[in-house]
Length: 360
Ligand SMILES: Cc1ncc(COP(=O)(O)O)c(C=O)c1O
Image 1 (cartoon, rainbow, N blue to C red):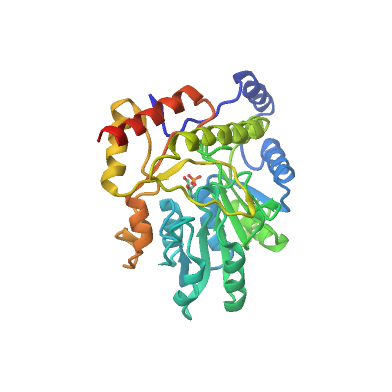
Image 2: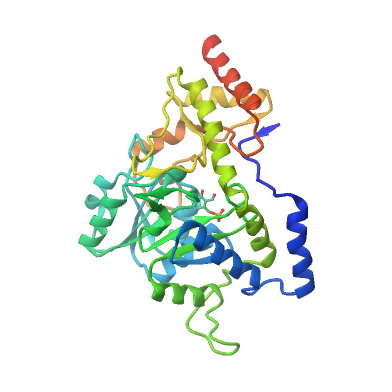
């Protein structure tokens, strides 16, 4: 069976070494030494000023909304994972969708201003599949209208924009370290900010508001992560450059095979160094997309409709039709892409796809 993704696992002895140390210390969670080490190493690796390791990417988004004290309407993208929208609603704000660009699949920054009202407090945009949004336009609009900017950078480990980590943009960037991501800590995520003040408040929010054992600095939540999760991150960090370059090689094999088909691929931001986090393919219509999905299923290959459905179609958000997002969501597939995937397996996947197009 070939799944759309398969988590990278480091050599077991390397993880075991960390586990032995945890056993010896008997310090399992609550800002332990491995969590601290992971935070320091991530900041160094990605050249970030401030980063807090949290329990998952969704928690990162919710903490970001909370710490910026956002209220009312948040302008966001309909083409993302459900967590981008559910975090907004969970934090009692209203998502206002602005449709996406056909070419990049990111929020169409040129349409944002039309949707700003007196109730708008922020823009929450996703760098879809690790491909940076139109950051300059979004930042200019945010400055003009005094709005906060949060980037859902769940897919962005290793992506740079204008020579630095894309996580350095916006008031806060949120990343996911879920097992399906190219860098993972089993479950996990992080909030990244340039502001020491925001960082300080995030640290309180992440730990129930604790300011010492018996004092509390406002409301907080349990957004912490454990030593076991941090240990997996520390192991995986040693392999990340190889993981990204293997994905690049694999993506180029896909490109070669599929370039003759009439399929669209997202246009990658020219000012970025890309991380090859996914291999999305956009078919001509939904019927074609489903036929390819089924054809692959027959051979135990599980591509994934991602993102599907468009978030603008959910029943718990205000009705707001986003034609481009709904159309793209209906006909996009992410093809298998992971460290262990062999070139021969990619050849096989592509042969099945090409065969479908030849003989349909
Ligand atoms: C775009 C996007 N945002 C947010 C999340 C949520 O991250 P997590 O699963 O770590 O909570 C994901 C995870 O799949 C995602 O793809």
